[in-house]
Amino acid sequence: MIRSLFSAVSALENLQNGMDVIGNNIANVDTTGFKAQEANFQDQLYQALRPASGTAAGTAGATNPSDVGTGMSLAEITNDMSQGTLQNTGRTLDLAIQGNGFFAVEAPDGKIYYKRDGVFNLDANGDLVDENGDLLLGTGSTTVTPVTIQLGTSVAPVSTMNIAQNGVITYTTLGSTTSSSATIGLAMFSNPEGLARVGDNMFAVSTNSGQPTFTTSTSLANTGGFGSINSGYLESSNVNLANEFANLIVTERSYEANTKMITTSDQMLLDLLNLKAAP
Image (tube, helix red, strand yellow):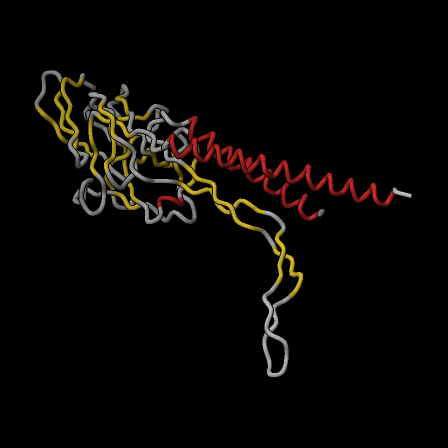
């Protein structure tokens, strides 16, 4: 009876975590490049009431073990890295990855982060930066460098720009000929679901994600397992609202059932106390 109370309490605590995950998914249904999460649960330690018994000649038949559980716990919160829908924006510096890979950006502190959110801008220095001002990185083998589309001592206004699916940028500046000295790089991981979320639509390397493999000057995007870069598009959140609402209902009903278990166990304890108090 007391065990049932604590089993129900463990469920309430962990179902709240599940509800938090669902709430975060729904909150980010319109977040560019967002990847949904899912809470998975597991049963906890079992107390053996009676062990299993084998059979022997001239003895009774075998019996199965009798165990009683002590509740449930959160096993893992998994990342759904499936492809989101590509939405046309018509803006050249809106970029969406179709397939494998992440954009790599360098923060002011030198740390490198990875993202599927492809909203980029051109700053005053001619560098491509994300919404936080982090530098978009290009191709490389052991090191990667920021994508700079303008060279020289002075920066001339860009008149036209085109970004190919392999990440190569061609552009013209006012009063100059076409240039093509910049290439957007992608990073790929052996276990992208192992990446750590750090907020601002960014991921960081973890001990279980593996180290990134970057596109190089000879192995661009859209080759070697890397996805293609689509200019004028953004990748939508991959949150499935129908699934989230279904999970919301199931989680709420499970929570309700476990609160009922607490009140029922409490009533049984009260009945027991009343028996003891009876003359």
